[in-house]
Image 1 (cartoon, rainbow, N blue to C red):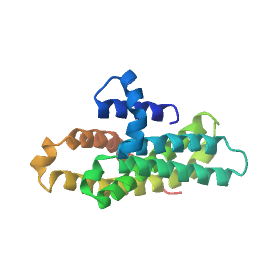
Image 2 (image 1 turned 90 degrees about the horizontal axis):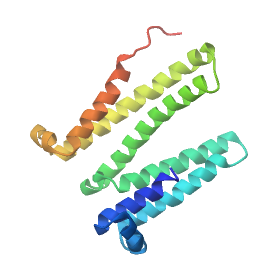
Image 3 (image 1 turned 180 degrees about the vertical axis):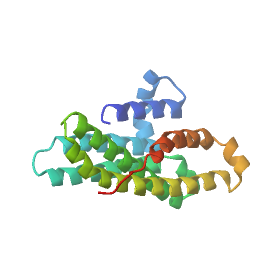
Length: 192
């Protein structure tokens, strides 16, 4: 995050100034001082540095985890304020933020389980114990993603399917469905 966020800032300034990557550096101070996107990108850089500090901090694991979650949430909120949702008002931004939180929670839970199973070499007993929790997280995440995604589709299309098909959102929606659909096919066959 810390490595890629400054790159994103430079690319955003390049696009705003319609210049080259090298030329973007000259516009950087003005873009950060005078544009919403520039200020939000600068905030993302600062939050990315704070996130690295939170991950590296020593001390109680719960406090560190809480700080990592809070800073990650702040990053997602800043991203939401820079998204396409801004064109549709505060409700759209808030729901986009909730959408990001649900996606991040689901992906983070899957990644954490994968790391514990493959790197730490947790056994089948651990996996059996954590699977019900992971299933609940996935279920709630998918429900929130579907609801907030439906709202976004409705806002983008103005409740007209033809508008949705012609929008830039349609290919993204298709990709999201293609990624999520296979995971929804798996169901637990028994309850402990």
